[in-house]
Image (cartoon, rainbow, N blue to C red; front, side):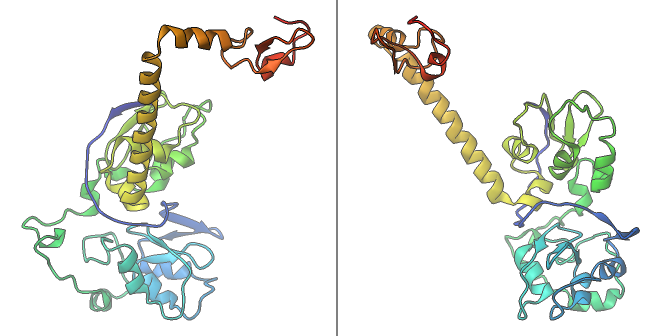
Length: 297
């Protein structure tokens, strides 16, 4: 994995799962999830009648399968609704920085703007909060390095000529915020501008993204700071283990090295010789190599 560049941005938002779609197609009809009217139409098979689908749509949610709903503006996914739940309360509880719920500029198309404004929770400025700062919080699109690729469908379209030999599939890369640069296997995050290339077989796009930047607006939005912190911690532990092993080997004396060589498999010289051969009683090969032996090496 090779990092090309990245531009840091900061946000503190918690979410449950990553984004899956911005524009959905159901039964041959395309729904614009930024439109409250279209969001209402997605609730045709809503299984929880005690939670108002109109209220869910008003506060940015559209139906996401089962009893799951997803916000079109912060990508939070909420499920397991009970009768005492309130769409507005649950939304602000699980995504306190949602631009719709915090009255920031969005692409929302409300059915009744006055009614929405009356229903949205009041934001009380705090001296230490981003809402009480001297400089206003930038619009969501202003946080993105490539705002024209905010929509997943646009990022997916960029992968039309993605090399088929690369194991990472466009769906994985798009979910991780990347679009294809059109050069080799280099992808770029539409949000923070991080560029990655030289993908290895076992690389997971979301994890690689988190390894190289902890301040990406999109990554924090869809995964949360805890996910990124866990990836960073795991990477530090792996590096520490490698350094410890290297240091241990470098401090081995001549006698230790000779013992290692003496106990090594005489065929592969990699694993420890742990198979006792008959009838000579020599311990000269490892289990893997002994399978093909006919005589003692």
